[in-house]
Structure formats: structure tokens, C-alpha cells
Image 1 (cartoon, rainbow, N blue to C red):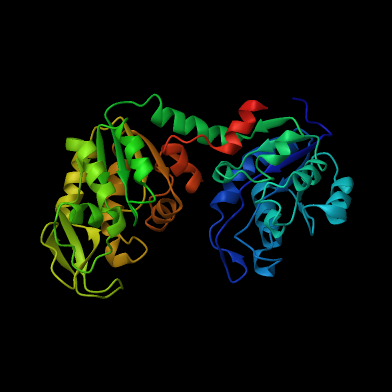
Image 2 (tube, rainbow, N blue to C red; image 1 turned 180 degrees about the vertical axis):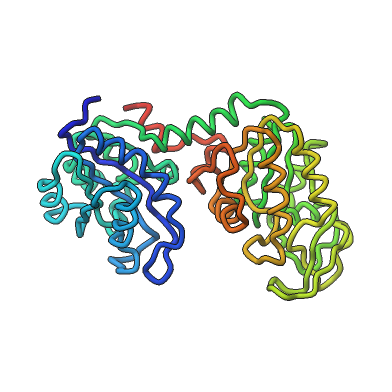
Length: 381
């Protein structure tokens, strides 16, 4: 479509972690930049909307204003800023916008109508543009006004980041090179049971680490010491294990401590012999070898969730070693989930995978086989 001179309303996900008013990690800003540069190069009048955090009111700490300077550095042009996403501040700023320029609107979640997918609010947002581009894969599992509502009033398209995310997921899930291996970590079985069941229909091996492995251990009747166990998910863990059969690979040894903090004395314990008052906080060296062996020669690897408490250096070796094994496997590698992305960056593994997804909940829901509202509306449009 010829976008020259047109007002292109773009939904990005610039929901970045903030620390003392500064951006702690601008990965999502960098991921959004190609679509925006593309539109500016084609002389569109680019209007960007996004959310930041979960404001209960107009909380100054959750303003998108600090994002504007970082976005400007990433797109290589000045970024204008509107003090609101609707009303006079927005319409006036849009009217002043010239072809090839970019405007960032204030946090859409300053208005509760966004999350409610309020039709009047969606119409107000849509009035700012001539066409709509959804580039926010990471927010597309939400049926919000700025994600799906505006598509009822404007011609709607997918942005480059959205397209890249969907292509990567399609390549990994729908047409995988074999063998296909999934590594799933994190704390809770309950939040990922749908993902585990969906992956089991596709993978040749399912490797489980992190605190969620404790729930599988307890479901087998093994002692878990003082480690985190999700007692309400024991039946689900048993069902998944039964369904998985030989596909399921659990850790065989664990790095344990009495407290989840740096500097604690560490012990390597057998997975079925964790002692009282000790907790598993990482996978052990034999588990790393087992996981690495399963990953060697894989055709496709999906990785979601660290296999230990990777944010504490004492318990990060397992995640780093498994991440290294995935990176050197020669497979098509898809990494998803905010904790995983944070872990690979902090452990120096960034830039070594086929695709690193910007989506947290959206990636999980897609892996679970759910249709995301923000994608469904684009298909309809």
C-alpha cells in the first residue's frame, strides 16, 4: 500500500523494564524500530501507541516520555511526543506531523477503556490514523482497544516484527526439522500445563527444569526438601508425565542450598534424594550432560524458561550450559518468554539463536495452540 502522506497508526509493545526513570532493557524498542524506519522512509506520518506497565491512574513513573529519547536513537530521527493518546493533545500533535516524521502517544493504559476494549475509545484512537499496523505481537493475546478495537475502523496490516514473530513460530511449530526438542523451565506447572500438553503432540523430547520440576518430582513421590512445589498442580504433573511417557526428560541431579540467596553453601543432590531444609535451585552437572545429549543433533529447539534461578549467579550455571548447548546444536532455535530473554542477555548468550521472541504471555498462548485476538483481527481485516 502507498503510505506516503498517510497517517499510519502503529501499535507497538514498548512495555520495557524501567529503573529509576530510565530504561533497564530496550530490547522491545530495538525490535520495534525496523517497522517504524520502514514507514518513515516511505514518507508516512507515523503515530505510535503503546502501553507501559499497569497504571491505576496517570502514574508519572509509567509515562512513555522517557521511551521517546531511546526510540529516537533507534530509528535515527527525532521522535515527537503527545501528552495523551486521545483528545486535543493527540489530535493537535497529529495535525502538526509531517510526512516522514514520527509521533509517540502517551501510555494507552492511562485510560481504563483500553483494556476494556471500549468502542468509543477505539474509535477515538482510530480517528488519528488512515490505516492501522499491529506490530505488537507481545500484546496480541490481549483483546484491547489499541490492539483489536481500532481494526474495526481502519484498514489493518501486520508490521515487520509481527510478521517475523509469526514466521518464526510457524517454522518451529508447524514445519519443524526433526528431531524436535522443547526445553521448558520456570516456576509453575499450572501456568504452562497447556503449553506442555500442546508441545507433547509435536516434540520428540520434552526437557523440564526450574522449580516446576519439583512438582513433577513430588508427583512421583520423591522428597523435595523445602523447594517450591505447586501442590495444586500435582495431578496435572502426573497426567502430563503419563501422557509424555519416554518423551519426558527430568533432571537427575540438582544444585541445592538452604536459602535462595548468593553465597550459600551448595550441595549436589540426586533428584530423588533432596534432604529436608534443602531446596533445588538449579540443575546439576549430570542433568546438564543429559540435557545437552538430548539437544545434540536436534533439528528444532524451542526454549521457554530458565532451568534454575538464573538471576542469581550461584544458580545460573545450568541455564548457561543448556543455553550454550541449544546455541551450538545446529538446530533452528526459537527462544521465548521474558525470563528466558533476560537470562540469555545477562549470561552473554544473546545473538546466538535463530529467533528470540519479544512475546511473554503471547508466545506461551501461541505455543499452547490458542488463536491470539490481535492476530485473528488482522486475518479478518
